[in-house]
Length: 319
Image (cartoon, rainbow, N blue to C red; front, top):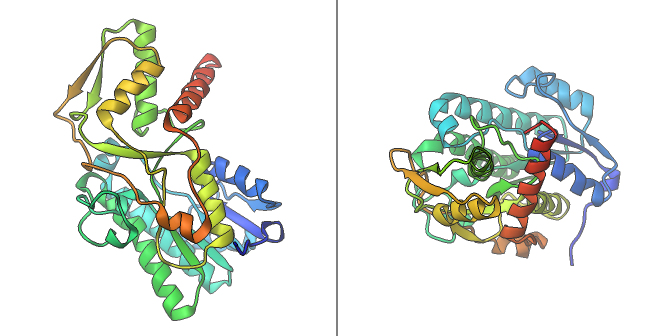
């Protein structure tokens, strides 16, 4: 049914390959036969600088570039440094695609973000709705910077026949996630908060907002599988959602994590903090139809694995 690209015959460059999703992705690429994967490391290669992009392509000589590298963070980090999130993400992606096309790299896989969707996108988010409004304000600069890679992918395909694709992963979680309280996303932040509160014997934890927004999450290993299948099978600039199609409220999520972490205190909602986008749930039909991807990991199982991994890290003094 699928015309699979033979990854064993391709030299693949994964920007951000040393990061959370990158490590899972490299494992999946190798599972499907990849033997030659190059991971450029920051600051040896700073993709905000055009000369570093050129040097990386000269050094790696890739047939395929999968662009995961990004400046990312939660709501707080995005609100504190919107200019950096816009400029760094835009310059990295724009220059990588342009020089990949110029230098004859066969295929470019651009990884976008769910933050590119309008704030009030109808549920479930369909790819054709991506231009029907402005993104949620707290992370719009980041979302729009990434969204420009879709414009570039489509325009370079139209003018130059360049084979680039654009994928939209939903929020990730899993072993290896960032648990730094200054920059982590909601799941690792809540896991850390609950475990530390339990250890201290605290009677309560404080969570941001009012708990009403909903989110969808995908286990990182599943997201890596989706990106790998798209790399092998998909050759169009139509954007494609990569998600689990499972929606949960922040309130229910917080209560679930507290239960799995065995924290029995009260959850206090700090409504002076922003909620972020009201709802997020993806339509994942296109990924199934175009390259046969469906997420496999149940949400509770994924959370249990993530909590177990983080507990082990803390036991080793790394958490």
